[in-house]
Structures are given as C-alpha cells and as structure tokens.
Length: 409
Image (cartoon, rainbow, N blue to C red; front, side, top):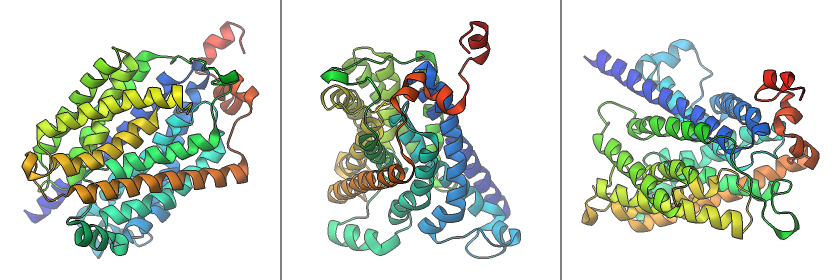
C-alpha cells in the first residue's frame, strides 16, 4: 500500500506538471494573437526557447539555490536511493512541476517586451532570472530560506506569509520584473511618436482566445496540484479557482465594454489573483477576488498604455504584477475565519510579503535587463522593428508559402 501511495503521488504530480507545461503553449498563443503578424514567429520561438533555457538553468543552478538540492548524483539516488530524494522519483517530478513555474517568469516577461527586444539578450536574461533571481524569492516563501518566514512574518506579524500557488512568488514577481524590462527597453517604434498614441491592433483574436483557454485549463493543474500529493489535494482549491476565473471574466466584460481582449484576459486576472489564497478562502471571497482583479486589469491596462505611456504589449504588469499583488493581499482578507476562510493568515503578513515580493521583482528586472543591455544591447533597431522580428531575427515569416506565392519574399 505504501508503494502504491508513492506511485499515485508521482502520477498526480506528473499530471500537474504536464498541465502547467501546457500553459506555456497558452502563453505562446496569447502573445501570437496580440502582436502584429510580422512578430508571430518570434513569439512562438521565444516561449519554447525560454522554456528550454529555464529547464537547464533551473536543473543545474536554480533548484539548488531555492532548495539546496543538486541532481548531480547517481540515478539510483535520484529515484529514491537516499536523502533528499523520495521514493519512485517523486523528487524528480517535483522538480518538473516547479520548473514549469520557474519558466513562467520569462514567459510573462516575453509578452511585455514583445516586438522590439533582441533575441539573444532575452535568452541571457532568462538564464539570470531562472538561475538566480526567481529561486531566491521561491526559496524564501516555499522553503523558509534565510529565516524570514519565522522571524519577520510569524514572530512579528502573527503568521507566515501565505502564497499557496504563486500569486506573489510567480505572478507578481514576474509582472514586476516585466515592468523593469519594459522601462529599460522603451516603447515600440512609432507607438508614442510626437506626443500622440498610435493604436496597434492585435493580429488574431482567435489565437488570443486560444491562448487564454489553454492557460485557463492548465491553471487547474497550477493551483490544485500545488498540494503536491494526493493526501493534500482539496476540492476547495478547484472551486475557488473556478469562481475567481468567472469573476474576472464578468468584471472585464462589463468594465472593458465587451472588448474580447479584456474578456479573455479577465479570466487570467482572476486566476492570477486567487493563487495565493485558493486553499484557504471561501468561494464567495474568491469570486470577489476575481471581480476586483478583472477591474484592476482593465483599468490599469488603459492607464498604463494611454496615460503613463508604458508600452507593455500584453499588459503583463497590470495582469500579473498588479493582480498578483492584489491576490497576495486578498488572501489576508478573504482567508480569515471572520469572512468564511480557513484562517491561519493575517492581513499584515500578506500586505508586507506582497509588497516586498513585488518590489524585489521590479529591482531584479531593472538590474538584470540593465546588465543585459550593457553587455549585448537589448533593443532592436527601428528599421528591424518596422521589418518585424520574424524576418529580422528568424529570417522567416508566419506564412512563408503565402509570402513566396505573393512575391513578398
């Protein structure tokens, strides 16, 4: 029976890893549908290459930084021959699962810097983010590194900082890293020329919608399977994720005046926000969390783009950065017993932890992308931007046969 339990946990976590891995296809197609046609190939290549770089970097460096575990031992040890590796390779599928979380950071950033970032500098930035910057916050929150959970949060603020599935560790951190990258990179050529605002429509609403659907489906692996074992799984997480998603959609529908881009991203806003407290909140609290997140995304996307002139192509800072920040705080509101939650959280811990995590992301983003720019140059030339990243970087368009037939190549 014990062996069967171990095998069931391995399979459970493996299915979670596969679901979150599939979300990266969602990231890719969300970006494909949002960028102009001349940048679609670049979006696809960036996401899959970033995932490969993230996997290798996390294997050799990042996982060791976060959890103090190296995989440079015998295969017998890896599959359960001794500490710290569990039986039947459970520790290996845990790596796979957490690796898909780590790789989400550069996937988030990719949408913000689309259409004007050089390819190889972004690859270097991915390695630095996943190898060093992300594992530091991951280790603090999920492995109690450096004693901050005990000293700062439990002792001083009454409870540990709670982030069940990554509203802060993954989404807020990634969104604020992206803001740093966008600030360093600047706006796309022609976006805000001569003080005006040039509207740039998305290339494909169906692809954008497909990306959103893929992310929504995978998110139930992202959230529910963060329990990491069958004995710890809870249907409450699934219900809360569902309610927050619905709330985000409906809020974005109303506030965004039926705009399909806002509607499909509203689902993601709700899911981003519910990650932190999905295991402790009441479904009604999750619905409220999602509704507020949908409003935050739509309003702040428009403010950032039109008033502050932050050319964040997919709106990843309001979607992941701000909705993630809200989600971390919302856990301390709707997770308390007085509002129907399971308790074990305090608003003080959630506010402080959420703000620290977000600020760390911004500082990390500015530092990493400033270094990358200094070493390799980060921004494509205006001429390459006008030509498009597909031809400028990859030497092929999204529809090469059609281009040849029409004499465009």
